[in-house]
Image 1 (tube, one colour):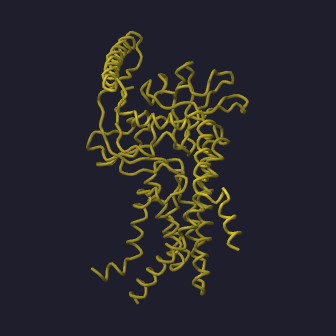
Image 2: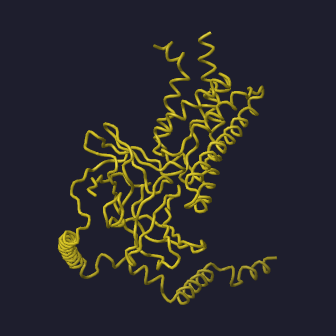
Image 3: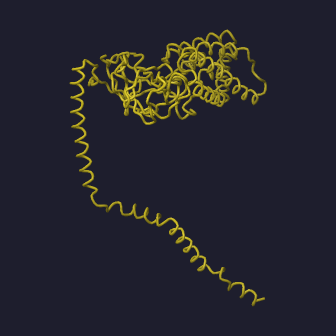
Length: 172
Length: 249
């Protein structure tokens, strides 16, 4: 049992992303917005397992999260796939401190990318109606999400990275 | 040397008593300038338990409540009767389910709540969800034990509403923030800040006359339409218990 837990540590943590996405702890938020949780898992996963794995799990995450949210017309899949692929091409930094801050920057960029792609879908859908009204709100949402994701990434990504490395080492 | 010291200690500003008097004087000046506000407020608090008619006030308020309740029931009956005469949709519906909010996403793009009652309890897609204050949203999805509600603040939500005062129909569109936007497709629509917004009798999704919100600000910059920000009466970010109503439209 213990061996199984260590072996599947990364996949077990994967299960918790939708839960935390649904939990939506307000005390961790800023202006009602939460960090973009899936990216905090996707970055360490893709860095260890490479672009193709990142892309596949980006797709998986997108499918799960799309099923949890009720928006039929908008999807998170393109952003997550792109981020998964992109994160897989990033190599680990030798300096731990610089590495920490890099996680923050990379996740902020990823969050900006996902937020913008989502916003573009909303704009495209409501092209005739109220796109001008949505602009301010959307920019606020994107910026708050970018800030929060970048803020939490150094803490969470480095811990997850250590966990994934540990489970890999135990496997070998 | 001793003589000099004696002179310096005998100055008026070296005496505590004088400073105390000065402080009292300053306080009195403050009381004078504030026209006794400090005293009046202080008196307000200390005399509160001894005010006359506290008990009587409660009795009067209770009577007023009862009067309003009776009037409300009479108006409801009148409303139903008139609607039946005019063949309009029914607005009263006693078939409701109480549910608790178990997940809440009220920030960012995704604006939804998940309730602890699902298809097992008779919740159906399209049912409306009302919280203390008014409409929260519509059930979009149900599982066996839960139901997911799209809030009216979600960018997915578009509902037919009307202004109670002028009875103009409009479209309530969620923008992804806490204030949905009311779009009136006519430039000379009579709308004022403070106008009450409720569900429209013309809506095919909602029963009529469900309270929704109040006009907070109006934007008249667009050429062919007026838009207004609506402050919702029901606050989804704090509500823990809601009522699910079945819609018979």
